[in-house]
View 1 (cartoon, rainbow, N blue to C red):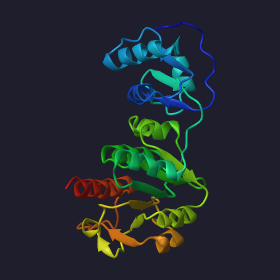
View 2: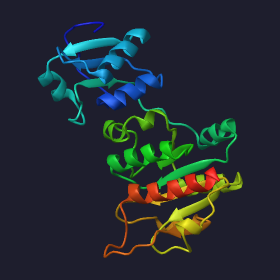
View 3: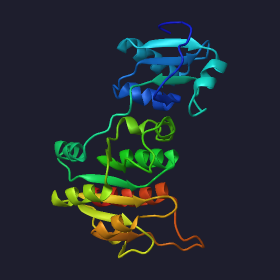
View 4: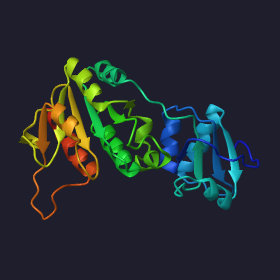
Length: 255
């Protein structure tokens, strides 16, 4: 390690867990310092973490397992925590710009009131894998980029841009003006999700864990797509629904 010292108290935002910290380093994110368990056996991931930190001149503090666990926000740190500045949010236009840079039609995911950081992290991970260009989340009554969300995303939130807006309906109207088709997901849909057209500029809107799409957001969508269900349950977990539809979009766009 580059430095063995008495740990300072951790204040503010953290990235926790080996995969999440490694992806933060690979993505070139600003990292104030790393805090690691002293005398831990360095497997491949920790070796790369230490190497990248050294190359970037990032201070690495060695502490006891007890000290690290006491300051961990997720309690699942796997022996390493990165202390980082506050989350970086982007304008929705920046997300669309990423698509035009790649020469692709924009594919965005809007989350209408998702409150579970694990759902946000899981959706971000699938969005990255399916080639989406970013997430849009509301500022109020919804989870943001928290240590738990970053860890659940397995580092995907270091690669997927996130826009945080004050009003989802206003954001939808602005996106429509720029040529985006807005497709909401709901059990009572106009079409099955496999019949919707995801090949052009599209925003996929995923409702909250309990209530689904809010009334105004639903009314502002151009189309409502449903996922057929054969069992006794009436709906799927938000991240599972998002995953199914994102991979349908991925399938259509590959043709």
